[in-house]
Image 1 (cartoon, rainbow, N blue to C red):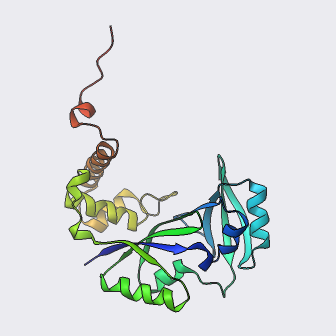
Image 2 (image 1 turned 90 degrees about the horizontal axis):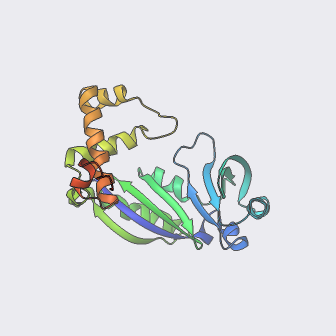
Image 3 (image 1 turned 45 degrees about the horizontal axis):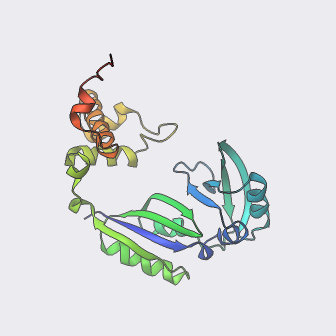
Length: 222
C-alpha cells in the first residue's frame, strides 16, 4: 500500500550544511524538474552575492550555475562532490519519490512517497547508515487519507497523482493530455473534465470558498 512520509533532516548533515552555516537566513526549495547532472535549487533569504559567496566556499559543492531568478530568489543548478551524502539520491535508490523538499532554519523537510509502508523503515536505516538522522514528522497510507476533506473523489485523486508522476504539471510538460488519457485508458474529454472538477474541488477547499460562492455571479452594488 502506497505510503507518504514527511521527514525532517538536519541541514548540517547534507551537502548544503556549509551554506546554512554561512547564511543562517537561507531558504531552499528543490526544483521539481531537474534537467542536468545536479540539483535545481531555489535559494533565497539573503542577497545574491551572499548566496554565491557561500556556494563558492562550500567544499561539498563542485560547481554551480545560475539558471533563473524570480523576485528575491534565484534558481541554481548545483553539483555536489561525489563523496557528499545526497538524501535525494538515497530516496531514489530505495525506490521512493521525493514529492517536495524545502529547507529553512537549517533543516530540510522532505515529503517522500513509497510503495509500501515497510519501505520507510528501509529508507530510514539507509539514511542513518550514511550518518543522516531523520525525524519522521508524519507517516500515513494514501488509502487512509480522507480525500473528501478537500472535495476530491478517489478517482480524481488517483488521476492527479498520475498526472504528477507522468510530468503533466511540469514546465515544459513531459506528457500531453492525449498521452495521459491513453495511459489512464480514458478518453481525452473524460480526462479533461475530471481534471477540471479536481481543480475546482481543490481550489474551493483550499480557499475555503462555499460551493454557492463559486457558482453564483457577484451581486453588483447599487
